[in-house]
Image (cartoon, rainbow, N blue to C red; front, side, top):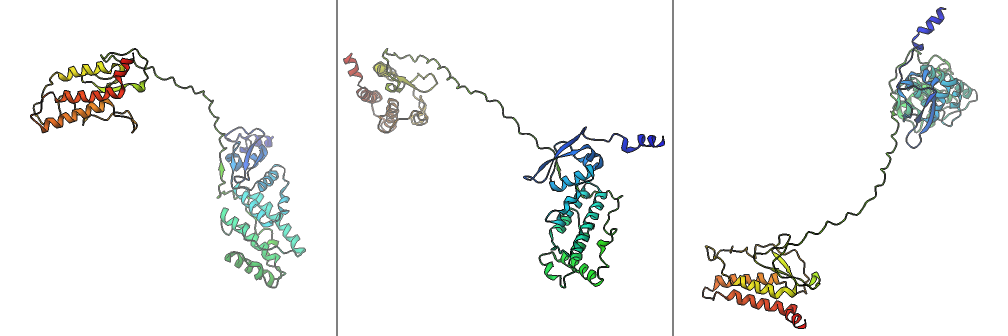
Length: 391
């Protein structure tokens, strides 16, 4: 009766805090990147190891643990078997060091003591058969890097190497390649064992390297990473439709007559007509060659009308904007093409300004004569008169 009551109110019977309901167990990844393995951890193992239960969730990744050693530990916690597989590898002491470190990280002192007893039996077997194992620095360096210096496991490994080398008269050749401290400790233990004829062999005393079962300190934290996030799904492909060109704006009337002939745009002429502007606000307007004569006459009538004279005779800013300050036309013409009428008109204005500033006695209709000469060149170039005679 009292046993049932104690079992009902015992802390072990209470529902332990857990980040999730484990059910039958969890799947985790163990090992370094590229060598990781997926291992199933049963609920029984989680109950036996509180550190695992608090630290691991489904899909978590334990990085700094050997997968083979981890499987052996899980199997031993699950059914108390499989630990003897640590004795069959080529690196006997390295397997011992990794298993001892893993038990230390999981807070399992009883497993550490069970591990020491297992390798003590192996030591006695090798000692009877006079099998010598070459001392290796790797297991000692592993313990010093992951657990610390002068641990019980490190002392056990040094005693293991020194005791099996007792049949050698000189141990110095066996210590080549080891760290100076490791070689010195092994040599000291070897001399004591040989001088005492084995009576100072500490491995034979099973209590020498045992860990108290009450020690649950966990100074070494495992490198545990959360489960890797799945790659984001690519968005569905959206068909791309070509944008339709914007509708053309209607051309504002320029006041010039327009022929009914379907001339191409390349045969039209750009002209600078004072008082008129293009649809986009430019100073130049486009005139078809057939309407060029009418445009010339209209321009002559406007040019014959006297324009207001500025206050200063030699001012650089006449009534209309100076051709020097007007930005160049954005149209691109090939080097072999003749100059546009607009450039001819600009050139005529520049000549008129130069003559006006240099010769004060020049007649007032000089600009009209120069303009007529330039327009005659334009008519001859575009063969405007011939088109009319041909029609």
